[in-house]
Length: 241
Image 1 (cartoon, rainbow, N blue to C red):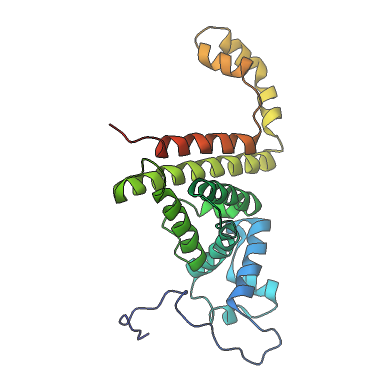
Image 2: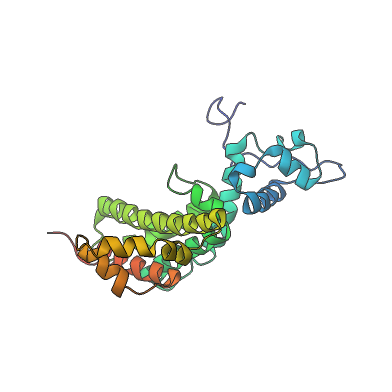
């Protein structure tokens, strides 16, 4: 395809939507993404295929290739739909409120669409809504105390994103493990209780013993917020000397 940038294909965000045509089932990228998200929510990314999406929409598989070239483009569309939801919280009064709102909205979106967590942390997402979320996050952090210059901003963004992605993936992984094993975290811990008690009674693991015996069972949302604010305080609180 000849483009203003040479002979390479334009990314999906810059390619015009195919013109509507007379057909029993009208299609659009928005409809395709919505159907793909429904399937991924129900069956995960492994259960996602062009054939299944086409069946969900009631069309032939080849019609979808007028709108998306490959699976990678399909995932790009799906991800940007989720980022559109996250972008709804951007308008906050202060930089810290903006960062906290985006982080919590990212967690909420990942818990509603678990497959989304599988696509975080790799290559950057560059759809229009993903860019809007990235711009809002970077702009907010650039106003934080102790974030100095572009290098400081890059490090702050890296630390924040590493925390969010790690926390979200850990929570989603526990959910999936509970479903696949039929055992929730409390039941798992109870089953290994006698073994762990014997090991702790050896005296070799005194700090772990304190955590097990004295530590409270923490609420996931409260823990996410507490740890998020701790990380945010650390990366924006005071300059290194």
